[in-house]
Image 1: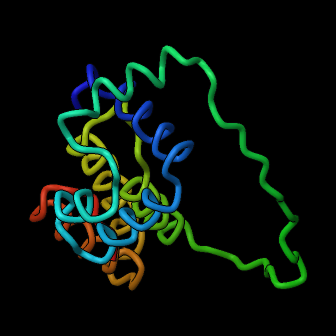
Image 2 (image 1 turned 180 degrees about the horizontal axis):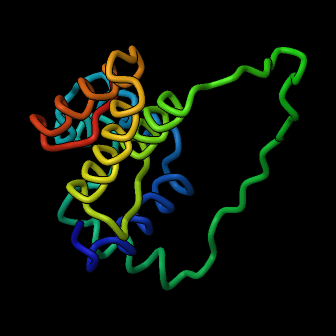
Length: 151
């Protein structure tokens, strides 16, 4: 990740949420469905790429940002169940969670290495474990793709 762009990218996200929420949601939906981000941007976001910097500068100087209130609810705990998980499965699950995590302080290779260490522990405890085999396949695919895509 380029640290110089991290704050600016979040400013863009906040701007799009505050000023063009539906367009931004439509853009995200298109990209999630496999559209090229450039085509999705030009089709959904009413902001020309060459005006982004000036627009964000004006938004930042304005110093007035949207506040959102969202309703939260407690989950229906009657649908939860307690289940015992083997130590091997616990390591495999932790490896999978590392693959899904986004830690800007670490790079993708570091996250994959941490997941692989947990997976090794899982496989040492249960070499034939189904969960560990699925996580191993996910890590292999992520290594090949150069990212953390989960199944």
